[in-house]
Image 1 (cartoon, rainbow, N blue to C red):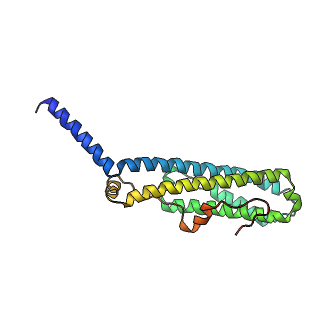
Image 2 (cartoon, one colour):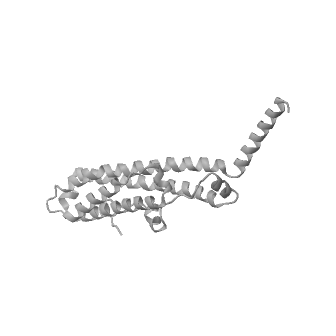
Image 3 (spheres, helix red, strand yellow):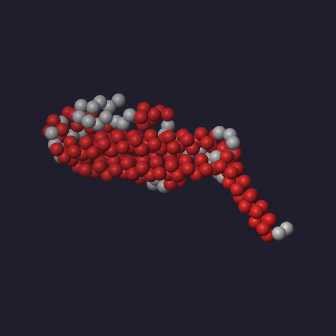
Length: 204
């Protein structure tokens, strides 16, 4: 067979393969997988931003000598658990590790909410400008966390739909694209509505 004919056959096969992969969702997996990675990176950035605020917040609250020590201890311990989980890129492919990460971050959210509710009982603390500034930063960070998580949720939903749908599910099996874990249903309200941490805010 002439070389020119072989070249034409190879080129035709490459084109046909590319069209087949595109029609079976391969490109969708490439695009959505990158979107998930980017969205997850932003989620981690915002969680880290919150974790970085906690030491200064705790140090400020310690200035209130009568403040409930158990509340402070819970915040410190919750931060330690949240930052102690190594959020590697592989974490978003491991449902068990993802659930542990989510639980630890949820515990920190609850502990911080409790601290800010208790702070309402201390007028001198509420009048402290440093505390007020930290509280405002925390509120802004919680809002950014919510936005980042919602973007991640949508990216994972799009990806998982492709994994389950025909014929892209065949491509998922061939190229090993399993479903990815997402934030659980019981946290949907928390995800859609950022915690209210302003003065006078109530926490469920």
